[in-house]
Image 1 (spheres, one colour):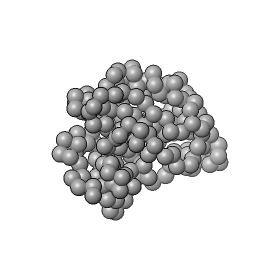
Image 2: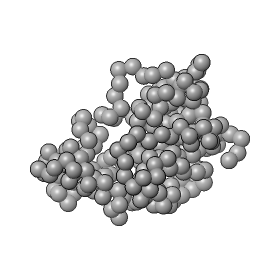
Image 3: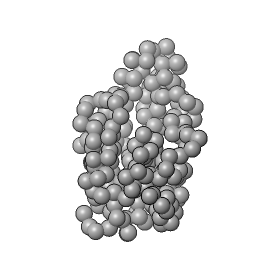
Image 4: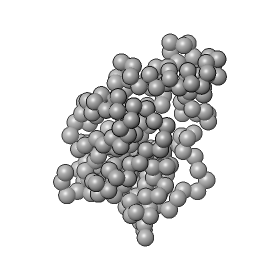
Length: 207
């Protein structure tokens, strides 16, 4: 790692359109179309309602989609590639993802394929096979001295301002809507907005 400021980024639905990709993997063999980025239900709930499966059956099917051979075919958002290339000139970029340990090796290969050395390291706070428990990314943020975390989950960014870290809540997704953002968190609707916020200093005062 160099002496540049460190930006930590999430992978799923931040760098990659994971929710929709998984929805396509699950929906295609069932003959159902699923729009992952609209509505207010999780993938397992949509599958269950459209097929008559139990929630547990639909959840198992959704989890297996991560292991499907087509999962690794997924490409990043084009704007994410452009943004990471631009930001890497002035920052060290690391990825911190809650993906389960079954796909850690695949994840590393895909990141290297798509981003090369622009992303310096990938950190995996989730060491479990599958977990619905909240994943704590803070130890890795502290380890690398991150000044930003860009993530689509409110739970990962909501307390960062208290710790002097800028939180970027990425996207306008059904799962991350909130009336008022916590102290130190800014909404980043897309990657051009993220680049502008970082260049402008984000939330100017975190004290």
